[in-house]
Image (cartoon, rainbow, N blue to C red; front, top):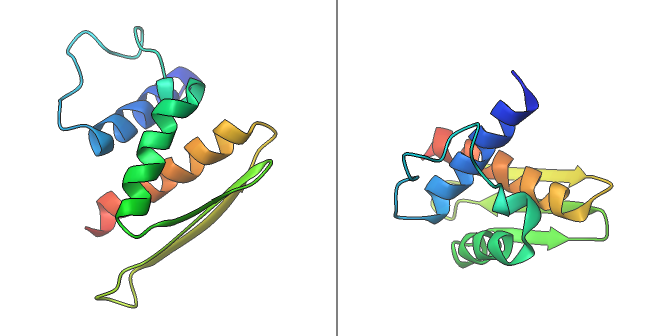
Length: 106
């Protein structure tokens, strides 16, 4: 899988999580701007939505740590720490992994 394909899949994953609107038909692998890797404001909207759902997010200088514990099922929990030379990439990567886990376990 190419990096563009992986980036687009992750973009679509976050978009589908954060938005009630479907991805526009013209947005595809060859034509998209990954705002969640380029714009802190867009990424912070995702962080806010997750925190409002009880997800604990810690963002450090070069890392992002995400913890989630389902209050109704103690066996259902998520914990990840991603370190990157670029902070926004660490936050984006951790969020992508959480959404993948969430979609598998809902």
